[in-house]
Amino acid sequence: MLRDEDNKYCVDCDAKGPRWDSWNLGIFLCIRCAGIHRNLGVHISRVKSVNLDSWTPEQVVSLQQMGNSRARAVYEANLPDSFRRPQTDSTLEGFTRAKYEAKKHIAK
Ligand SMILES: [Zn+2]
View: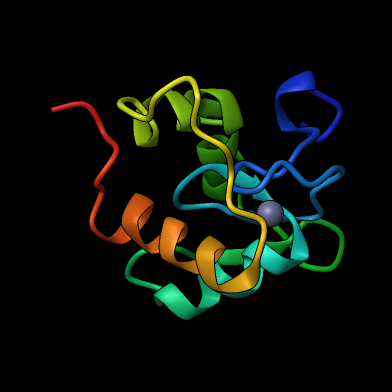
């Protein structure tokens, strides 16, 4: 799945080659965003390492059904085209919380 064009960049900050994922959200993440997702709590995001952790069929299906492009279409539905992804830790955490915790950018 990491070989998909879709999943070659972190869903939140666009860093190249994500090696982490949130299997309940169905997205692939870089190590920095994985840390932020851990801070959100397991009721929002369940983070795993792509390489180190073992997988249940249910978790694999969740990632196959979503993936980064679809997740962006859902969670970033009303972000403007001109939106630039935050790159500092604190702005990135604010963005991530607005995106998944408050679901501020999903289509209404
Ligand atoms: Zn990232």
